[in-house]
Length: 88
Image (cartoon, rainbow, N blue to C red; front, side, top):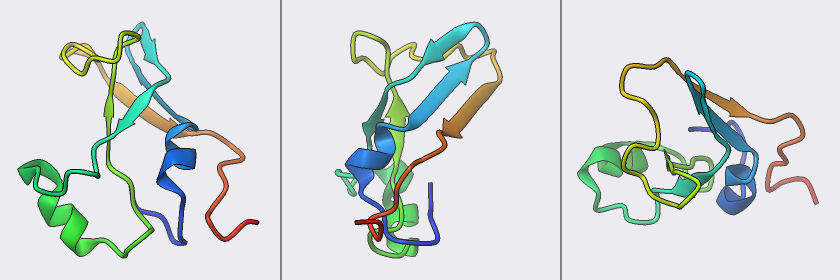
């Protein structure tokens, strides 16, 4: 996700809610730390520094496998009140 101002990725991830069908996952894990990952490398190079975060949905056990149903609509919500890094 890209933002129009600087963010604190750890704080933003705490406010991201990912849901799929009847399954709710309110956990997200930072996927942007390993910029060698081919799936995010291009986006990491295009984004402005400190204004983006990449994440993966995880199960309640912290696993990415089967975190969301393959045949379900997926919704990603950033909860109201998410602060930017500019808010002190």
